[in-house]
Amino acid sequence: MKKSVLALSMTGMLLSSAIQADTILGIYAGADAWRTAGDGHFGQTEQVQKFNFKDKTQGSYYLALEHPIPVLPNIRIQHTPLKANGETTLSTDLSLDGQIFPAGTMINNQVDLTSTDYILYYEILDNGLVSIDLGINAKNIKGDVYVEDINTGFAQRQNGSEFIPLIYASTIVGLPLTGLEFFANGNYVSYDGNRVYDAQAGVAYALLDNIAVDLRLKAGYRAFNLTLDDVDNLYTDLDFTGAFLGVELHF
View 1 (cartoon, rainbow, N blue to C red):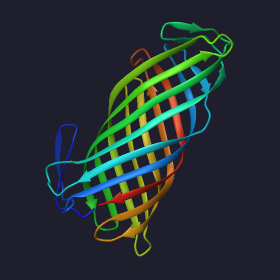
View 2 (cartoon, helix red, strand yellow):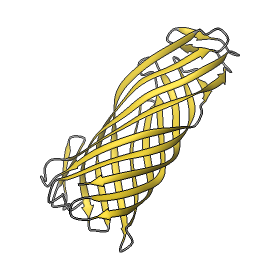
View 3 (cartoon, rainbow, N blue to C red):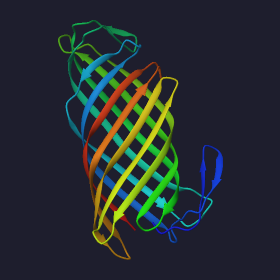
View 4 (cartoon, rainbow, N blue to C red):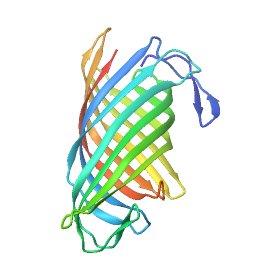
């Protein structure tokens, strides 16, 4: 993260500040194993049902490109499949894709979502110890929710897809002479009854650091919430939270 002067552009407004950019092209590639505990509600109407979900290990992958061109933002793409399933006895009637599952029905329930982030950001501070990035994110969430009556086998699935704009921020604080860094990053938006946040924080250790490649090991905690208000006839309030372990390469 060796940087020169940049300009921060967010939501169509150009702000100027003394900030730094990679003096050479930098590529970051990483992968995390995220142990999620799922919790939440979904349905076709505002009368949503709370579901039980089993814990599951999810994969998450990202690629970032940083460059020395001041007026152009850096780019980060992150892909996270989110799946969870469980068994629930309905406490209220559930409407899904036009079908009604009455209260008291024992069902298998499943959420299968894919979250892909397309992030444009500028690094507004990098003094060797502290780094701060700010930008915008177009998060594409698509997938489906599914329920199946355990007794009859009757099942219904409802699909949804949406691009959601979010604010992105990231910070890294290094501890000199230790190889350790503390990091935190996240995305957030709230509007018209919808709310989405995806945030993580943790510690990283530089296992390898030379002129050719850097290798960091990471551990931390990640929290993701998806609250949708009538998006493709779908209402949700879903949470995925848990610890993760990861690795990052910097070329």
